[in-house]
Every structure is written in C-alpha cells, then in structure tokens.
Length: 261
Image 1 (tube, rainbow, N blue to C red):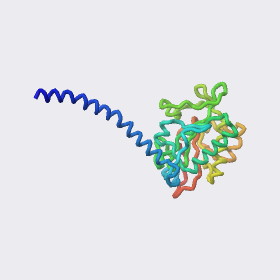
Image 2: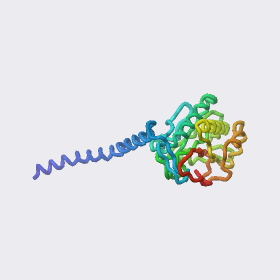
Image 3: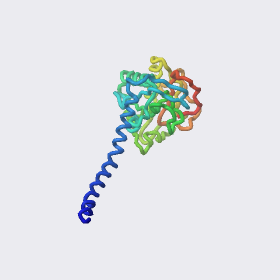
Image 4: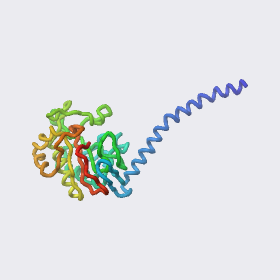
C-alpha cells in the first residue's frame, strides 16, 4: 500500500504538467484551425462572390479580402484581419485594389488604411448596423503629422483599433491632421475604379461638419458631382473613418436605411 501511495505521489505532478500543457496549447491549436478556416474561405479558387439583400439584413457568399498590406496601403489591424472582419464582395475588393494601384502611380508618397468590411459569410456584424452583404467598406482617414509628414493613425485595442479616435472640428487629433486632399484623391480613385469594374459608389458617409473641408480641397471640389454623401449626421460620427457603400447587383436587395455605420 505504501509503495502504491508513493507511485501515486510521483505520477500526480506528471498529470498536472500534462494538464497544464494541454490547457496552454489548446487555445493556440484552436486559433490556428480558425485562422486556417478563415483563409480557406477567402481563397481565390473558391466560389464566386454573391451578395443577397441590402447592407442591412443581407448576406454574402464567396467573400474575398484585401491583402494584409500592399505598396501604399495596410489593414487597420492584424487581429481584425485574422479574425475575418475584412471580407467583401470580390468586385468591391478588385475595385479597391485598382484604386490603390492608381494612387501608387500618381501619388506614391501617400499611405492609406482600410478598416472593417464584414464577415466572409456576411450577416450581422456588431457593432456596425450595416456591413451585412459585402458591399460596405470602412477606410481610416489619411493623416499627416504637425510638420506635414505623411502618417497613419495609431491603432490598438485601447482605441478600438482607431474607431474611438475623435477629431476636432478642424480635423485635428493628438498631433495628427486629416489629409483631406489625400482622402479626396482616394475617393476619386475609388469612383473611377468602381466604374471600370462595372459597379459604382452608392454613397459615402463622413462627418457632416468635416465635409466642407473635404470639398474645399482641389480634388474634393469634384466629389459632390460624382459621389453621394450623407447630409445628416450618422448615429456614429464618422470622423476617424469614412464608410463607403458600393452599388453591386445583389439578389433580393432592399433599399439601404438612412443611417448606417
């Protein structure tokens, strides 16, 4: 009995170490499978993209996503990218990439950041009220530092990956200034690329108080003739990002609601 007791005492630490190892490794293994599944969903050889319904109440099949970064652009968050929050209709993705390529040639010094768009399968996308059918994409505003240098917004979990940043009425925040000219150039490039890909921009949602500064730039003066903007303030201010709804033929689509995010 004593021998058995000693044997039990020796095996207990081994079981404890084995249990700790499994407890530590299981989340990593689960995340690896999840990220692999998300990557598989966005593969280029997958089914074609199809959107159903509207930006509210819709869904998506065959979603695609932008690269994590490119020559003049990057994702707002590695975590958001890995967790599948940047999927969209393939035609929308192709138009965005074409716009970035255009700007890389015409304005190589500028840098852009795309933010959230939706799940690979579409559907409810908290905390957003829309982004459900793969045709809505958020973009962080391009910025410069006080000395005029091109920069990107600092994003982390502490500022909700940029979504909780608040610019003042002059477009400034914590040493950063919105580059309204760069934003206008991006929207114009998006508009051209969308038309070249057989779609269009349905509307852009941006802070109503900051819109005059956007339209006052050389490139921005062209925007009101080409792109529809919200005239009323959205339920979320949209000062640190601008929301773009692309007009893509979707099955069973309903008109979008007046307020979106």
